[in-house]
Image (tube, rainbow, N blue to C red; front, side, top):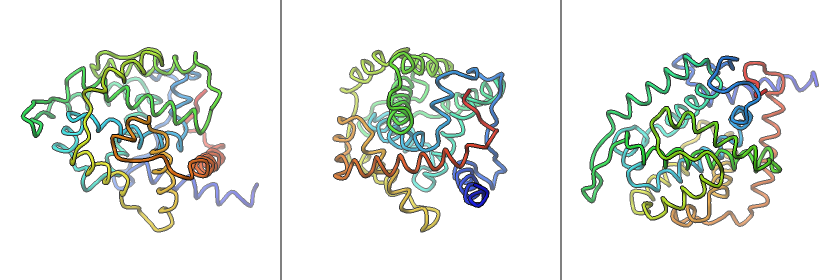
Length: 284
């Protein structure tokens, strides 16, 4: 094991560099016993797994952007066209802070996001007004994210996760959604699936959606060495999405889906091994 220590350290450095903007001095969010969610909570278990959260996060973003108002908010008010990694980093950091960070830090992060939402408003191409503070729209963004994060965890970490624990995840993640003023917010998996069905007739796939899809799936890589892993995770995300969302995006399940899942599971196990000795974040 001593011989593998440099490999383990290199993997940890790589993952941290991906999720923390070192040019801004960002460091991993340390776990606090005085967080919004206590040690042992299901949400801390789910959100602590790097690979399943990456896969779930990409799937969530693609699914969220099927709502024209959610897409417009990002398209019109962010630098997503030139800084996709930055957007993913900010989302990952918000999740880390609100899941593991000290309660005060979590509340500060939520307040910052709400202040940003206050500035995000505009008009869709068809003339319909939108605003990021709309509780109904926030409910869609939340449920589309939560279902994919949870399903990413189930596929690549805990395939036999009990229905009770799945319900606990939604009940716990509901707390942050409510602090962001989302409404309605599901507290069980059944409620989440029902809410997604209710949103189906509001979703839209058009030229702007396709452009955003391509921005996500063809995001530039930091190095040639990272390209195969990024391609794998993108395919795993497409594979993870609910069928209707995949079809709306004009995507199909990877033909070698078992290979994609097996390779992604291998990446997940390797990263868990690399972080096994790290103490800055523990789920329990």
